Length: 242
View 1 (cartoon, rainbow, N blue to C red):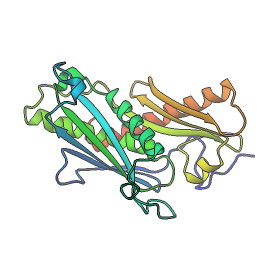
View 2: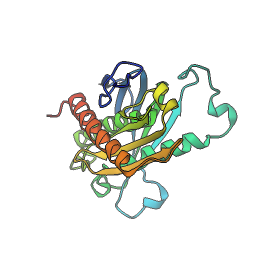
View 3: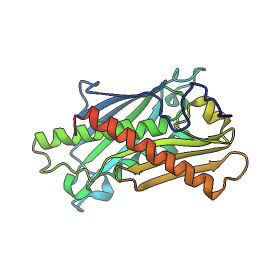
View 4: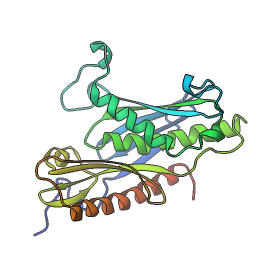
């Protein structure tokens, strides 16, 4: 008998996805991504100065920052600014966002400049880091489009599209795009970042209970590839690219 997911989706089905662009008046690029009940606001800001380690190299830099608003979850969490430090989870996620987005960019084509992509979780129901990467890429692409329009760069320094999705094994069943209830109950949890040609950029996988078999991993990676393909289509639709 087939397992029923909490929201009634098929095992290989994404949550409803929407990406709205131009949601911030001041940022060079902005996008609001919704994946089910998870919502992340992504902005990309252009800085004409490179970080110290890029000075004199002719290369640019892309970095990501991530935060969760106090009432993004069922219980209010304290702002990290009040605690005087960024916690380990936040640091790990924003490093992942930065690595994922840098994989999309030709650093030599953007020159000695920096783009900072801020990803702020407005509402969390699982998959916030993968939504941040998927929406963050759209904001980044828009920022680069504006840079070309302003003659700051000669060409669009994008090598390929990048998106990310979660997969996992819940009640013995491989599933795509876990919500919070599924993520909490998952025996195996994996976050996958891919380029639009199907190549993997990063895989974060953990056996929460029993170790997983190679066959199960292959099933999860196949689901992730399918999901990212659909997310890239949503990104292109938001950017009005055929």
